[in-house]
Length: 113
Image (cartoon, rainbow, N blue to C red; front, side, top):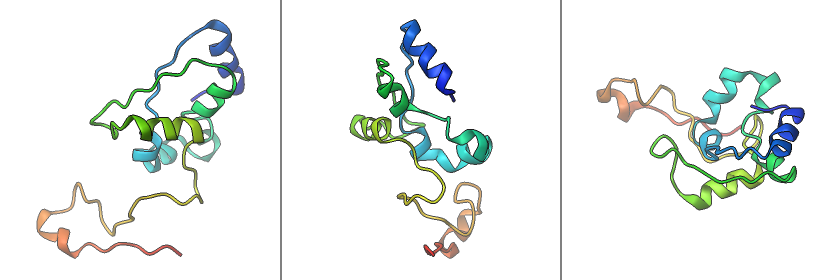
């Protein structure tokens, strides 16, 4: 998370941050929920850093997030998903990682409204 002033200070100081561009795309709902709407727009501001002139390498932190360099570059240059934007994900009726494995075949997928 970085304010406009912090982005400017990062660039002016010559600091090279090494973000994980896929974090918001891969696990963004949890990140956005944890940060809340007032702070989520300051999360992983790679496009802002690039526009301000920062040197910006990419790091995937795989296997936490997908390791494809092209996906990371895409996310770093276009910005992160926000509420109301279309994204590639599925909304399931239960938590796939904690539901009893015997019930997985009964989960349902939500429909886009």
